[in-house]
Length: 343
Image (tube, rainbow, N blue to C red; front, side, top):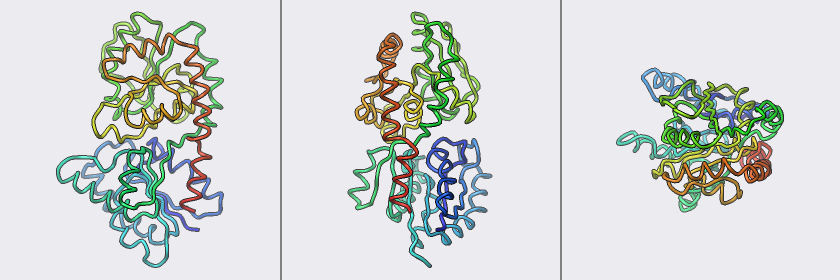
C-alpha cells in the first residue's frame, strides 16, 4: 500500500516527531511504501517570503504524492485543503487529518478567515480526524465528521529506559529540580512564573532546568537555573531527572483548545507536574488522577510550594503517571488507532 505522510515540521518539532516521524519506519515494516515530507523549515516560527516560496515550489510535489497514494496522513497543515475535492480522483484513497494545536484559530483578520476555511475543508474532506484536545470532538460531531481523540503519543519505553540513569546522576542532597521542556516559541508561557520560582527558591531547596532554550531574560536572585538547548538525546536523558514538570496555559480561549505535549512527556518520564487547571490539562488531570492543579494564576507559588514539600505524593504520582502513559499515551496505543482508522 502507498502511504503519503505530510507533517507540519521535521522531527525537531515535537508534535511532528511524536505523531508522524517516529512511526514511518513502523509503517514500512508493515510492508507499506511510505513517502514523507514536512511543511515548515526547521526552527522557523513564522511565514516569511522564503517560507511562502518553499510552499509554492513543493506544493505540486505534495499534490502528486497525494494523488498517487492509497492512504494519506496529514499532520496539522492546511495547505492540502484544496486537494480534498480531488480525494476520490483515480482511486478510493483514505485521508486522515491529525492535529494537536488549534490550527483553526491562528492569526487575525484575513489570515484567520483563511485558516478557518482551510480547517473546515480539511476536516470535512478527511475520512477521519484525530484530535488531541477533546474540546474539538463536540464541534466535529455536530458536523457529522468521524473523529477520535488521542492524548500524545509519546515514547514511554524510551523515557523509562533512561529513567534509572537519570535519577542516579542526581545529587544526594534534597534539592527539588523543577523542569520544563519546550522551545523559544513556547517560553513566553512560563516566563510569568519566574518571579514565583525565584521566591520559592528563597524558602525551599529547589533548582530549575529549562530544556529547549539557551538563556532567559530574567535576573534570578535565589533560583539556580540551568538552560539546556534542545536535542532529542538530551531530552530523553534529562527529563526523567526532573522532580516536577511545569505546564502553563494563559487562560485565553485559544489556550483552552491547545494540546499538551509537555504533560505527556512528563508522565512518560515518571515526572509529576504542576499545571494550570484549564483545558486539556484539566481533562488529563481528572482522567489520570495525576498532577498538582493550579486554579488561578495567583496560586502558582502556593501550589509549587505544596508540590515541592510533598515527596511522598510526588513519588505516587510518578508511578501512576507512567502507568497511565503506558495505557493511554504510548506508541503502541497510538499505532493501534492508526491501524484501525488509516490502514
